[in-house]
Length: 174
Picture 1 (cartoon, one colour):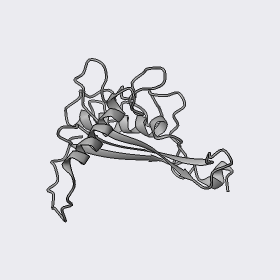
Picture 2: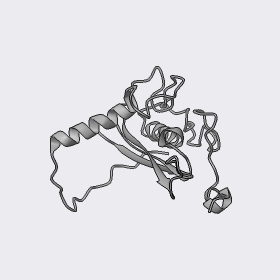
Picture 3: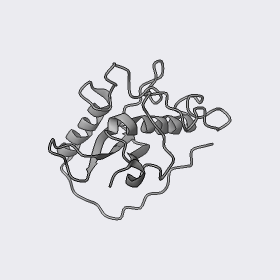
Picture 4: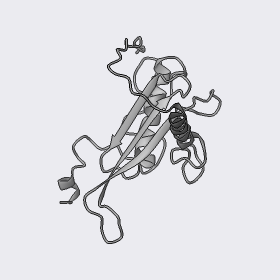
């Protein structure tokens, strides 16, 4: 597997924005992944949420991301929802972005719990394929997956359900 050359970009339209505001937004997205206050920084036990993309001993790749939870249906009396979709959007490297990834896990709860581990695997695979990271954690040297797609190295509770198996009727919800 080799990374394809960058696609030629065509500007469809330009939008004006305040550069200072954009800088604040991007810094906030960096903090999400790299500061203790960030929801995608580490697990409650202190382990990093980026063991594949930024493992110890390899140069750090600075990420910028945003976790999210899409709540569905009507809240109960306590303001809680029966269904929540987990999502996470990230781009990297921060200073010269090469890749942007958005992950949505239906009925996955909070974005930091289920969507971030998937994004970590996708980013590691990308950086292994383009040569920024050595192969072997996600992509073997022969191009096959080193980690089974049904396995999570990150959290014991992570699940990778088959597509279409997490619909409301199959979960016993209306």
